[in-house]
Length: 140
Image (cartoon, rainbow, N blue to C red):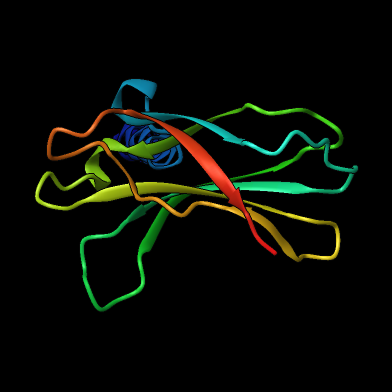
């Protein structure tokens, strides 16, 4: 009976260690970061309730929807541009053979599109930088 107690305790300790490893967050050094500055040219202040959405997506496939890797939704609440956003994605999800792009849009409190990206902003691979300056255009 005494021989089984150390074996049982060792098995329980190993189980606890393995379980804790599976729930640990990914270290920061395994993350790729994209710094985005989003703005618009119009000299207006948006009323409270407008929301800025910035996304990072894999845009490699021509006739398929882009696969979103990260997204930041920010309530603007009277803040003036430019808006600074940092998107993060695990380095293991970045395939050097693929293309990635960021985009931004602003919607009013009713969900109507007010400003959007009209130019592709490539990032991360194929010589593209880890940052983007997005100038959104007004939507009428």
